[in-house]
Length: 409
Image (tube, rainbow, N blue to C red):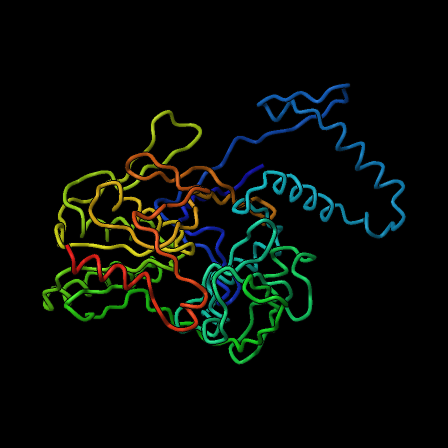
């Protein structure tokens, strides 16, 4: 079978930007690959061997079940579409890996996914992920309809327009939430602090995400918030640094809270402005290579000594975690906040000849000291929780702690 293989080193979890549907970001390199044509043969035997060669895998049990369904299932029309049965079987195979970042999409789903990537950004503006089979808000984007409607990180989306999400496929849930500017969608939310589920109706809008914002806090502390690592983030950060240098700050706070990730090379560029020397920024661990691949800082930092605090929380994911972990490994600054999300896997996209696609985890990111982020996250040097009550009252205890630390160095 001929296929187009595209390597995508994602630093965004299976985090879905419900701006127009869903989206993942990519990093590092893209290559085309055409494997040798393979013919699989299946012979009945009493045992199914567990071997590495897929050509010799005993598929007799699968074909036996297929034959029984094809012959005796009560609804004959349901078994007449062989493609539907095949795609369902493949999805079952992929789902058995229990990896929310590894997904098979049939041709229709793949086509709509690619269309969404190229469409204008309209929707509710929230980053969502899958946790234990539940559709969960990772974070609402800043100044988005989702934020204005009051969605919070950790909210479980129980229903979409009255339809229970647990009875939907992931793709169906995505397509139910997406929509054009001016239309609305009603989400039924389960929130830990509230006893009963409640409805939130959100009017979709155009989404314009400013990835870097800056202000000079009291007592001359520079504050830079990085909301995502997009194509423009590196240039925006550099421009912000030049502006901040004119303010001659006593210290710098970089806020990575609610940052779901993005392009890792952008995170490496930003780290290169803060850490001196051509040191390892991140390691890439695959199952095939005995030695990890290493990505290096470019060694000409603009602010290698300015006192630094990185703010993180449990919605800081992937590239944001790499940045915090690298700062921590080199003791370049203090990491304050809550334990991060724990997304450190790398995905590969394989486009198949029938138009379907397989998005599969093929590697892990590691910090310079070799710490695996996947399912572990980054534990801050100083843990400071931001409670639900604090958030409602506008009390940012984490930012206060960061300011206090820098002023008392």
